[in-house]
Length: 373
Figure 1 (tube, rainbow, N blue to C red):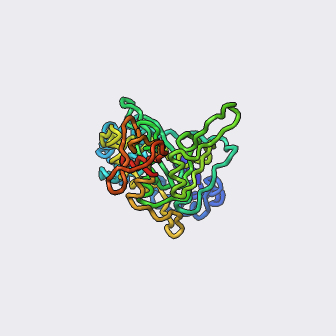
Figure 2: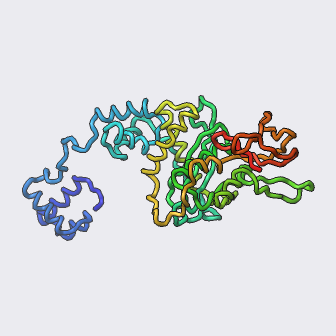
Figure 3: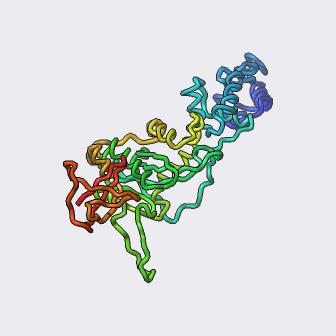
């Protein structure tokens, strides 16, 4: 039934009650059934014009948000939770502030006070020429990895880079780590979280960046050779992880959308806690990931998981190492980082190897140096 003026309804029902028009005609004019017109005629006969007044007229709505609640909501959004998107703010009100309120009344209160949610809802774009790839079926089958440089601690602080990984099948954030720039250590620390908590994934999916794929022009500049011994790729090969790289943005849409979410939610959470340093942020990230996955990720089917058994912590430290090659001198020593390092055997004695021997040197994530010959 379309909304009609009460005076108009009253005039039609009055004519029907007085026999000037039939109930069928009245129903057609009002767009209702004849049974409903008959109920209105009966009510009009009993109560007169009062039958057409709304029952709540003059009464305060029980569900209406109180003035005290509205005032408190505006106060919190103006101060403690300034900059939060409305949905994120709603979670804080319900869970942390003890204010039971729905999204619609919250939106009304904040909009009436002149606030607009900082989360931008972009207009629907034209359908991509290359449609986004469907999710993988198994947990650990494919982990999208990337890094995002941003003003994570606010515009008054230097930018930092967040390295991250998300499971393609469940949308679960698997690892996050801050560093000043996009670095091998940042990806290694991210990988350490994954290997320690979940195990060895089947594949990583990243950008065509030098940290994953080192490309070098030949002398003629016409052919490209790929160095398969770069550090991150070497680590993946050692652990049996397939490393896939792409330049197609649609192929890694899940991690791109993750950055949009984190640049809204994580920045607000860091500001709320007064965290302005990389070390402080890295200590907080495990708590943030647990809350994020609880809210947004699908529950993984562990029976279909493709994660392999995690290595021992000591092995993980060695796998996440940086490899160098050095040549020994006459005293069974090598030069590394501007220092002369003596090579020793497993029993602590000087390793007796010929001069000019090529030695593989590994610097682990914890800083331990291991030479292998």
